[in-house]
Structure formats: structure tokens, C-alpha cells
Length: 387
Length: 213
Image (cartoon, each protein chain N blue to C red):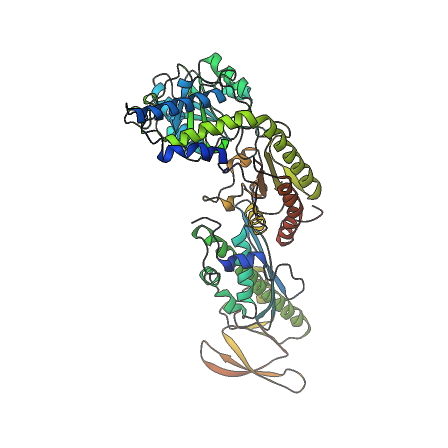
């Protein structure tokens, strides 16, 4: 049976979510904009879903905008806000370890008249609020720092960054995709103005996401049309998807506490056993301020793609930050930002657990990994036992 | 296409790589290419006898296709003369593996380059050894002749200078046809390929470089 330890890249949709979605394909198929009874059923479902997702992150229902997913939410937040606020300034601050979509959006903005500053992180991948403060100018309009990193799992000091921005009158966006469902999020307490969520990361369907737009925050729409979602995101709502995301959030709200405790045990066991049984292995990311489901390693002298392929042969699905596994053949920018050498970043392995992970999945990977690493090291000109 | 969408043949060579390891000895040459910073590092070892690659090993720090291409090229090169082996292209390797994802074609380049580097080093080594032998013979006996088919010796400028300063006679673009003499070398018949003429030469020692030198 396949062993899946790549929950960070995709999660199965919870059966209960599938069940909740089904009527919205052929029974409750109305358009929420339609004024008749069939439309009313859809409108009710849409607004109930909005309220459910809002409650999940401590927001008000009218602050929740449904989108097609996290990438769209990131685009709408950064580009939409920058375009709306360009009369006030053109400076945007992001961290060096943002998701690739944020990096590429920042690149787009910097080609279009905006100035983007990237704040470095420490060896554990944490952004210091002080370093953000140092880079703020009177032209700064927006700061974007992810809630937790999607690769190494490092959790950022979001509340401190939020407060800092609030005091300076600068908008604060956070991409919370890696953190949602693993850390309780409260947008008010953390002084968040814009926040990206994805449905799949809550065990909901792919192709749905949310942009939280705090009260009083104004953004220009990227998708213009019939004025749905307060005019911020036009297009007939993906209602079955939205209902699915809301159901996923509702389940998460109830089960998160017990679930994350289980993940923590899996994670801690993975970290302990891998570091103990494999010589010259290292943990990437923060030793304690890390997502409860994330174990991220690097092994001296070997390359991640061949590691991934070897595990694939054993029926184990994992991720790596190796350049060889990427479409651009460049090493993970997150690992490089930690100060790792390229050859160190190459030998990285990311294991993420989730709702359907069992103890025997952990057993399998910790028993297989040492021999797989050993075999690849025997082929490597870089690995010497005594080095 | 996914960067890891490999053919069954690539996967087979990845799972069971042929000729992994290192070689040692006087008749072994090593070639190293790549750079761990840009991702791949490949080492090839070849053992050459009578101009033929009789043994070959590799080590690599690289992805699945780097391992598979290295493994495949060791199979292609083994048993070939070094000149034949020099002609193996990255396309040959990729074709033998039933193709590689486009983004991974550079891996087959790396393997072909590493093999070429090993062969080049072998030639330089052999050239150096031959010249050193000639120089030491020249100290004992006056008439030492060096025969090579090449127009130039593939040795370091330093060694070339030493030959020039010695009494060694270098016959370029020439082939040794026959050795005459009773229990020892006395006379040889040489074919000058450039002038296309044959002649006899009296000498005490003759050193031949393999055809490609």
C-alpha cells in the first residue's frame, strides 16, 4: 500500500466534505445571483459557507472573498492592494522565504513601478520583526510574510509583525496556506489585513481558496465581471467548491486540537529516529517553532531527486527541495535563504504528515530511509564516512 | 513533461546501476566533471589495455538521470577502444535509455564529458609516461627514437622542451613497420605518412606512442 508523507503538496478530500458537496452538483445547482427560489438555496449556502470560513479564522463574514485558490488570493492581495494604494507609496516588503507565487508576483510588481525589498531570515528560517522595521520607508505600503513556511515548516512571529505594521499604518498580508489547520489563526489578534487561505489544505477540494480582506482594507479587483464577491472577485461562484471548503473548515475547527497532537508525535518520532539512525543527517528549519506535521532533513553527500525516486520505488511519496527535481533546475530558494550551500540544499527531504497518516507509515519510512541513504552515498563521490 | 518522468530503462539503470565504484592502478585514468554547486558531480575511472577500455567505474552525486546515464555509458564504453569511446555522444546515451526528459538532457552530457575527461587524462598520462621513459633511456644510450602518428606530441610544454634539449629523435606522422636485430633492437623500418615513404633507421631504442598520439 502506498505511504503518503507529502501532505504539504496535496491532501485527500475528507469523505465528509465530499458528501457535503455532492448535492451542489445536481440538486442545489442554482446561481447565487438568481432571484428565484433555486437561486435562494444557492445564496443561503454561499453565505452560510462564508460565515463558517470567517469564524474559523476570527473574521467577519463580509471580510471573506472566495477565489480559485491560494495563488489567486496571493495575486489579488499583492497586485490588487498595490494598484489601489500606489498613490500612497510604491514600496513593498516580503521575506526571502515566501512561497514561489509571492516571489513571482513581487517580480511582476517590481517590473511595473514598485520597489520590492526582501527581508532575510536567520538559519532557522525566521523573519525578525526588527529587520522588517529597519526596512520600512515612508513609501512602504505593504508587508507580506507567510504564517509558516511551506517547505521547512518554520512559524513566523506573525502577531509581532502585524502589530508593527498596524502601528505604522502599513497593510499586512500573510499567506497562511501552510499554517491553516495546524495553528489556530485569529486575524484580529494578529492584526492581519489580508490573508490567503486554500481549501485543499483543510482537506477540502482543490480550486477553491479565500482572500481575507479586513474591514477598511481596499483592493482593486483582478477579475472584473458581474460584481460577485463584493466586486473584488467576479464570476459565478464555484458553489460546490465553496460548500466543500466551508465543510472542511467546520470539521477542522472541531478536530484540530486532537489531530495536531497526533501529528506532533509522528513528527517528533520521525525527527528523532532519522537523526539517530542516519549519520551526517540534519534537521532543516526551527527546532521548536515549526509546524507540527513537518519534518525536513538534509543528508550529506546525496541528491534529493534520487532519494525521492528510491523512496518512490518503496511505495513512499515524499518531497525534496533539490534543484534536480524542479522544473527550473534551481535549488529551493527557501533552503538557500537559510544559508545552506547548493549541494546541501540538494540532499533535502521533506516529510509531512496529515489526517490519514498512521503509525505504520512512520514505521515504514524510518525503517527504509537508512538503507536508501546508504546506497546513494555508496555511489557518491562527495560522501566519505569519516568526513 | 515532469522532470522525473523516466523510461523503464532509465529506472532500471537507476535501480541497478552498472559499474559503480572506483579503480586503482598505473593503467587507470580518472575524469571528473561537474560541480556540486550547480548540482551534479561525476567521476569516471577507466582501465586501458592495448588501447581498449577493459574496465570502467563511476561515482556520481546527482539525480536519477545522472546515475542512469553514467551507468549506461559505462556499458557502452566497456570493450571499446578509446577512440571509439570518444565518439559516444550524449544522444547515443539518451537513445540507449529510450530517451530522457528534455530538462534532463544535460545529465547525459555530463556522463559523456566525464568519460571524455577520463580518456583525455589517460592520453596525457600515457604520453607523459612514454616521454619519461624515453628521457631515461636517452641517458643510457645515444640513439633513442620516438615514433608517433600524431603531428604533435600530446604532452606538457615542459616535457616537449626536455625532449628538444635531449638527443631523442622524434619521428612525427610516422609508423614503425618492422624491428630488425638479433636479440636487441638495431634497425627499424619506418613509414613516413606525410611524405609516404619508407626508410630504415639504425638505433638503440624505439618508443612507440599508441596510434592517436
